Length: 273
Image (cartoon, rainbow, N blue to C red; front, side):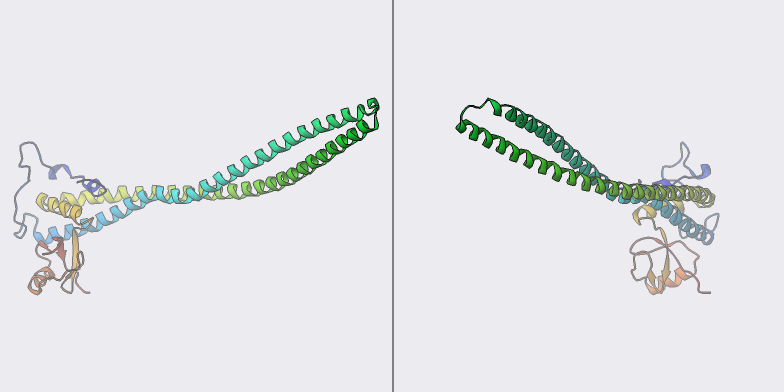
């Protein structure tokens, strides 16, 4: 037996097998009175089922909390990844701007040198060619300046967007932290209640015959956490299958340990006030 249901099983010392005893425990007829009485045993099993259902519910709540946190963290992680990408794009724009500014400096230096050579030109033809070279360099410089201006506008827009996203992300992180604290408090409360429920469970188990308890735990495992269930209007509430009328009459007495013919869960009848 494994999983959450196995965690329920904490037998009191006097109900455990001892060295040299039969591996199957004491043999009793489930439909014959025991030293504690079948009617009393049935009531104890009903109480135990109610306790175990609450324990399993609390365990389920605790196990679900990491998934709840993950569900909230995933979109936050995506938002962080998107912000990181925006910052990378911002850095890329800054790098381009710096490169263009260096190109502009180089072009200004080139134009300066070209203008300095003007006085050295001897012929009109060379002079005209030289002016065209200066003009071409000037156009290239203007193009670089336009690119720098465009990059600065993009950088400014990117910076505003990053700041806006950082504010939103910080707000979401604060909400997540508050949510985590709330869930952690829920875990503490659930664990505290679990501790109390397990103590109460142990007290109930002490009074249940070993063979009945073994049957109960087997049914808990096979019945996915439901070993004892109500029989209502000739229908088992565990498997929703019909119960033979004569058997239902016996179940209504709540004097015997009677199992569902279909799912084998232990049945009882809840009296109408």
